[in-house]
Length: 554
Image (spheres, rainbow, N blue to C red):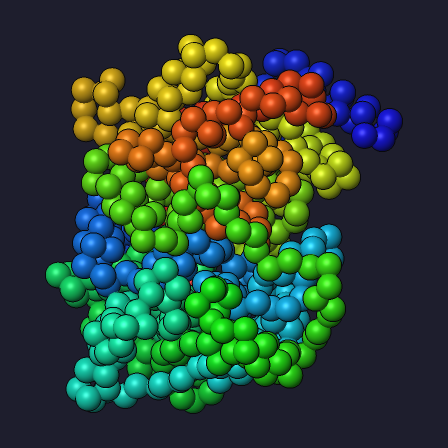
């Protein structure tokens, strides 16, 4: 570490408790003043006929869809889910989610600071300038153009009011959500969905704030006749279950910019360009060549990497085994954090931002109001890594490339969370303490509570700081949140924030504990875990006001 940065770290870590409290209070007062002055909004309530993804009813529907085979897209899409980072980016953000879920290789790096290949919005700068997209979004034809330029085969349908089109819509939903199992059972592979669906719809038709919007469809639930919509404008709405008939009707109003109805798009992969072992080398090379001709910006693939295989001790979140563990954890009450965390999941946007990205996910999942806008062009309040720029921490992170456990805890305290930091050692006592902390967080502390656990509003969440090498992974230190625990396999679900490198995965509890013990070379201390809880005065509880918005403010 350079001498100048050593001084910054020393100054940062030497903050005493009284200084920290005063700093937090001053920042809070300043943010509240800013929020009031700018007429900003924290979230928007869902209409009564849309079921919040984080609710108990949603958990029931999700388990039913997973177990009956009507949620084939869900694990792949939710593993790549992210919030759009501009108000006009609902279309391109939806497409990024789908391209990554289909495991299409963009064949260029996602960041100049990284050697990894992964789709981000910034890579979709063709067909139309992103500067224009930022202002007014994209229409359905431009969405299809972008998809076809980036390795997908797209089928666009603009429905009308006829019963025939409604029946076709239901049939398409069933085909996509079941992975086409009935029509082609021999080639069915629920771990690698070959088709995914995006919809373009009118928010007004669903009685939401805004106009046109894009989102992917993740699952279908037959008993309630609803589908799961992964809303990309997470700062405005969580994902939700929508009645199929109402969703169909929301695609029918004409888009004022094109004079055409909205619609649905089915995405497959160009010439089966899926990066998995089931494809022959010849098919892969042929598909790679075909897609390369369509890409507008190509860079050399030498020295770059598309994903990294998980070590055998870790179970891929998108696998059949993972689906079994997840359903079991949800049904036994050991996945209280899961729906809240997965609704806020985001891949880090800077290679060194695993710590601040993990913290942003957790603060949003705890429904802590940042009390300032997430974007200069937006009126909505929502945590992003860029908002965690207090105590000088973000500057240090950008220059040094990492966040220490102490810095993580300080940042959390400055942004509305109470923290309990634990650095374990090799003792059995510390291992049992970690196991107890996991059970407490993943069950919502149901053992010690006399009243029922509020699964829709988890009180505590956990972040772990661990050594990647100790888990057999590529890299060194890393932060990620814990989403669930499965007692039968004695494992926990880790939402890895470096999604371009690894998908979320289930890790053996013993292995995860061991991975926290190696010393951090920056601090000379072991890594560890932090349990976070919202400070009462920061937690948002009041219903948000409805604001009229224009354009694809998604």
